[in-house]
Length: 330
Image 1 (cartoon, one colour):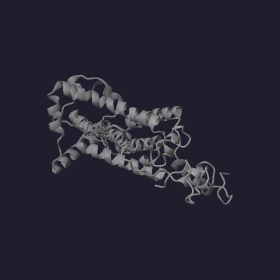
Image 2 (cartoon, one colour):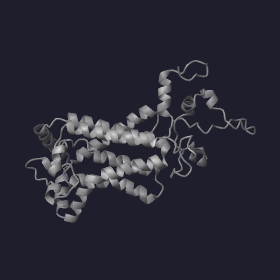
Image 3 (cartoon, one colour):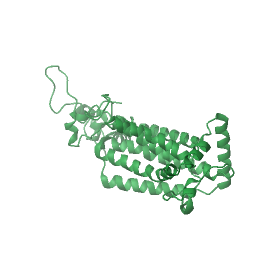
Image 4 (tube, helix red, strand yellow):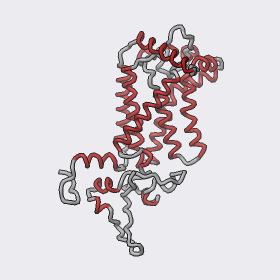
């Protein structure tokens, strides 16, 4: 039996599940570390276990390229050849492609975990759902990258410049699925990072760098011959679906959760954090978060009890103060 409702009846299971999903909770480091590691292992396992359908993947790549030409957006060839002419630039882009999508994504996760624990789980859910949805694209829509399109003239820059780190070319290609190009998770992950940085970072220069990150990534994935521009569009669509699923699960946008949870010592230091966070909302908006009703259920109290202030009513106005564990409804 679950916690009792205001009428003394057990709280229905679906209400308890909904409350759990919609109530900010402090993430646990060991649990989150294990979850991230397990998720990436499963992602890599499934991604690389997709059947090798080279002929179909190449045929689809030609079809995609023809479609881009009909829209006059087939810029990959020009970018690929222009970047390849500048050795230091393309070598840097090769390393960028091979490493930064791991480094920056993990860095943003750590930053959210440490400085925005109340928001971490919801924002992390967007990343996980997006990555999971991408697996469907890899399985059902095998697509060759431009560099593997025979006769198209694209340059495999990793092979030409003999750079290390990429599992897409050279000796490492045998352990990686070469036809998992649609959607581009380099774009999906980098845009996820950009949105989090733009929403929560304080210095303007950091926010600007965050916005530039996916734009630079877009150039890099085409310059290295690893993606068509429509692969990037697929990445953005997949990320949008990730946001939609997260909102459905948590009841509000990931970015409407409070910065700190009520059981965090920093919660009261930031004015109860009922409207985001006193020093973290750079634009001064009061983004609504999970409702006080959900927070009351999570603590085992009835919604009516949750509406009572532990400090008592405000005699001057006749109104009651909102408790620290209560958040505006989304």
